[in-house]
Image (cartoon, rainbow, N blue to C red; front, side):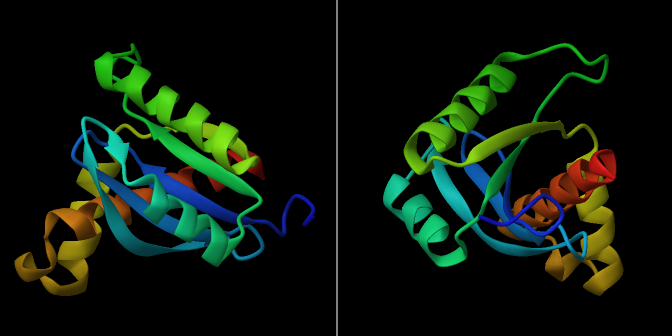
Length: 142
């Protein structure tokens, strides 16, 4: 069991059709985008999720909470919490949630800086958003 500050973290940008995924390292405070998961009404292929957990052996998962700009919950917020609870139950890792307001806007800006419009495909945006969720969460930890 890695101690806090040295854990591997899987971060998720929850969406009903696509769930962005990133793997982060607490020790460096950085994350790398992985392939986004296709979802049907917010439900991914759990076999694919199991492979992610087997490959990366995270000690923690962070799920972005899609909130309204005023901080209030919306229907998708409850679906994201349900997804977080399922990760905890299925993979026996601690799961934290993190406010994800504006991460998609930031992700588009970051991808544009890295290579213009051709880089702006939906799966990349979702997984870069997952990186930003990790970075936002890590900033609140230290």
